[in-house]
Image 1: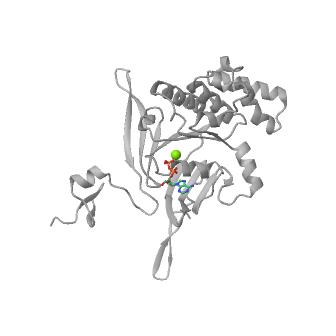
Image 2: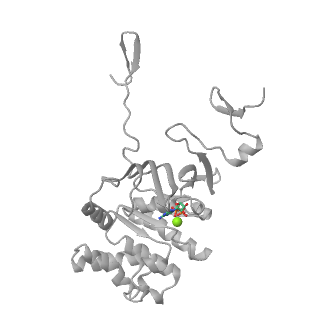
Image 3: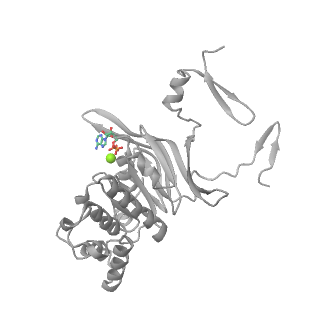
Length: 311
Ligand code: ADP
Ligand code: MG
């Protein structure tokens, strides 16, 4: 029956077989709004943000300072709740969790790495003890903990740092140990807020590669936010966030030439939101002096946008 039209009296209605937005995705942000009130002033940090992340993806969200990135991660990590909109990670409805569910979610389902290297690690514990700690809190037996810690420090290339304290590690090593800590209890989702913000270019690349190997080797879904556009060189999918909503995406893929050489292709897409809105880049608007009313035309295989002033 599906796909057919049913005729009732004068009206013909198509049979809809449409699911809910984001069914099947691991992370669903649906028209997320977060408004902060401070001293009577309203700040709209998220203004109807839509974002889907599939299980197994490595996604970067890039945006200028103040665009809402930390606000988004605060909500996804279960620390904050949205003012409006729907947000789900796996089976968890993050807008409607009880306090107890929130604790369980934060312990078991999500791991995070912060920009401030010092915030990620307990300073008086060794790297090994830092990775052991969250497992011990979760009640994992000692032998299992030791095996997991060994595996994670090895996977992140910091096995030789096991017995050192954070103060005895470089910034890059600290962030890789921080990633191991975040993964200690095998979360489905790893969130990283500007994990390379305090690092130089070479060390940043090293940490981004560590996130990539976590994604490919361990299969963890990773969402990293940063103001650094060069992160897109390390990930397949980069989502741009502007004024609290997602505006465009860059997808990178590897193609093989006839002569066998490989090259990377990066394609930029505008994001059409669920209400049908699309943001035209400023350069395009300025080039054709598009302001206010514009003319839209549906053609055979494309939609064109023209200045509303031309006759
Ligand atoms: P980003 O991480 O992209 O720099 P944020 O999510 O931190 O952006 O902030 C988005 C906007 O919300 C900014 O205008 C910021 O000043 C504001 N903001 C963030 N946190 C608060 C808060 N606790 N109270 C009031 N305004 C806030
Ligand atoms: Mg931030």
